[in-house]
Image (tube, rainbow, N blue to C red; front, side):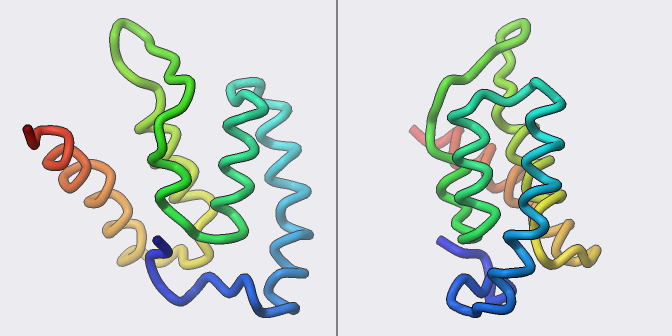
Amino acid sequence: MRSDQVWKPGDKEWLKQRKAEWKVVYDCLKINGFYTARQIKRVKEYFFSGDEDILTQPYEHTTIEGLSRFRPLCLVVQLWLHPDTSQERWDLIWRHLTVDYQEKEDEP
């Protein structure tokens, strides 16, 4: 599910711009060494589609002291790569990944 209409995968000009931006994003992800090839593939899918479900699907969770590294990854990726970088958008992403996600996790 895409969060809003700032994602324009059908717009050739927008897609051209995102492809150019992806080269930089990809280099950052590879240099970091924190992300697996599978995680980078999911980040790329999110980057071009805006489908938040891609980032919330379960996959190779690496844990540190029992804490999943996935949720912070998801937060960082969304804040970094979302086309709308307004404070309002960042607040919505933060709420979705902290409050809403926690409530969903707590459901029986």
